[in-house]
Length: 219
Image 1 (cartoon, rainbow, N blue to C red):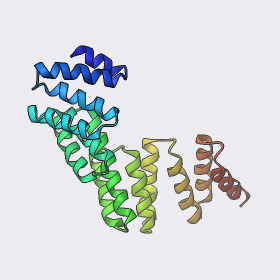
Image 2: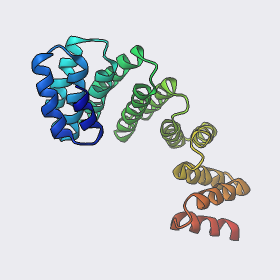
Image 3: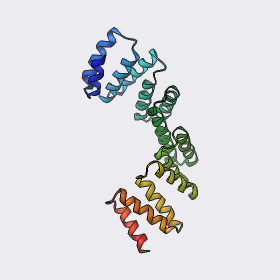
Image 4: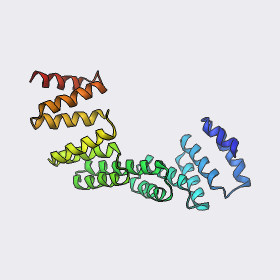
């Protein structure tokens, strides 16, 4: 199977699938081979075939966290977010590898955004907080939490969330801009200017950032 893995690592997914098939004819209960074949099929744009492989891997080893993680990623690709959360959650319980935890936090954040788009702001906030329980330094969850809190007029909490996002990702342009808006609207002009100066350093050619900064500096 090493030859198939080498082909997969080199991006030769179709060739790797053929070698995995040869291996699986003689070793049909090998969960790693099924998982790796599924990864190749996903890369080749065959989600149904990939899912069948991940399910076979889990049939032969229910503790194969990598297959669960790959299954969750495939479900997330298909916008089946609750099902993806379930797969990632089981994977997180099985391994210390950071990948499933990152994926779980991202999917919970996506779920929060889906809820916010249909007007369920409080439920969205709960999902963002759940994502942060999974991964406390997940910047997109902090950013989206800040956005949702600002929409609820909970400005001090929004500021804290944006600052947390920036602590995790200092060049988070959107967080800097949104924080600048809150500072400007609350009369904290020096802090607003500082935000936009940081934003300009991150993205010197951003017209909105430059226009807001000039406007603030002119008073």
